[in-house]
Image: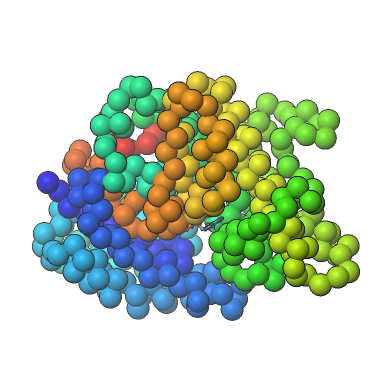
Length: 355
Ligand code: KG4
Ligand code: ZN
């Protein structure tokens, strides 16, 4: 049995987790900084870094106590290397290096984007990952920073079918909520505001879905674009001379959320059909969204296994980091103490949890 300590600090949650054999989550401690960033309407990188610095030690203690272990008992320290906010990432990475050095444990640098996908496999039977029948696997990663479709074969080779060319889906929800004066983070508050609303009352565009008589170029088939939806909301607000409240607000929130979900589901299911996908994974903060989850559950074809990451492993957490870290540990692949953070997502050609 191996225990991996995971550390996550790429954005506005400070998280530490202990995961057993890439699977069983002993503890997943998360300290959210939302209240600190909310007055600014978004995450302020330097403020995030400062908060991580003061939160990491207590969150580490909480995780170790919760797991009933000491640092000596972990087999390796896995840490988010990127992508994310550079000042925030550096705090977690340097903290992890200090722990690894002091306790003489190996260090493992983890790609946050791939960790999100792995979040869908925590607390499940990992034999699924080595079964040929699981592939091709398609992962929809939707968060505040990412909107991508990644296709993975049984050997672990991966290709990005498409990503957003402007805003991420979570960003579109966050910005939309801000325009509506709903606060930060926008995804959850927009979802709550939209409850019971009429999602068909207002029409918002579905960019790059080939609607409105515009044929899609082949490379646009799996690309996403959300900035036009946000602009449409801005005009919708300008053209409205009443109060931003009541039914109007509820129906606007529902219609806006519906446009974002519709684009995500349409493109994902087109890829499922085109590539004969056997397993569909949805992960990242936006995969918490109840409308998106319900729609995927209803529309995923029978014969395709749908794996929705559990909500607590959708938004940023360190269990996904520790879980993925175990796959490096079992192969003895460790990082050097010179490990550097990176801000942007590199091209993904393999996933580390197969083989
Ligand atoms: O994965 P995550 O915690 O951080 C990033 O890696 O970006 O995702 C945060 C994003 C935010 O944009 C937030 O608004 C969105 O996930 N989100 C949601 C919901 N919960 C969080 N979006 C829609 N519905 C939700 N229930
Ligand atoms: Zn994330």
